Length: 385
Image 1: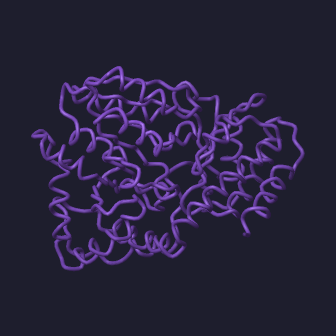
Image 2: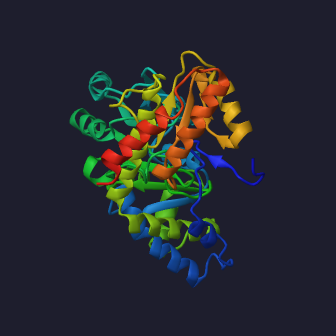
Image 3: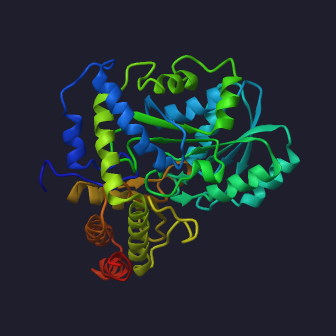
């Protein structure tokens, strides 16, 4: 294999488009310069459609988890009662963050691999009127589930005044997100997933209702104080040193998404999901999620008759291809293939071709080319319209 070649098919970080890499190599400028202000001014109107909002989108220098923590510390006070919907490892991360701040947490546990039923959430809230905030994960990266955030938001609003805070780290930019229309109060994401950048930027979009709640909270922390960020955005600057190279890359990545058109971006991600799922179905290899619950950005596979970790090793050793393993109690039981961001149907067809070879080398008897043909057929039916 070529020493410098790597094939990244994990659910983040994702491959970086060459034009974005070039943009990040632009010579450094002062972070309080007019050039930086112009950059921030240019970025905002391109970010807003991705979050489905007319509100400013705050940009933090940090990972996606920084945005999760910022949402918690700004919107919720110690000893408040909250509901966290746990559909996998990243729903559980919201629990850990809340408990670290002395927040009283109720958990709605959902079987890993299934999406939450909005009726369960509304029923829970009807029984617990004291809950001030509901947390959910849009795409649960650890299982490849896409939760019905629009239905959840509607259900929550019908029975409660609780804020609705959503982790969109592994899907915003790859699936529709409509903070304003759906009634989400805070929606966060990170740079290293569908936004096609390295890790290091985190994003927070807030409703006016959430902003009022945050303003009334005297304990917002220091670095994560979202009031500071929003106030500085009005002057096209940031309260602390921004990750300038990443902002140059972000501006270019947003240009690419704008040029493709967001609806086309979402269709592409759905196509990649369908091609991937069809390939494994062709080989009768079980998928963790149903078609209805599946995420367009990552697919989880639960093999019944071969070792998931051995399979991953073959892909890495033979082809320098990286796919993800399972997390929590699914560690060693599943593997996950990312198909988000800078990913095309050609990438999926390449991936499935290598997957088939690795399956044979792992001891799984298959008909070579059957999965590739299934993916190709999906493309011919749906990808060329």
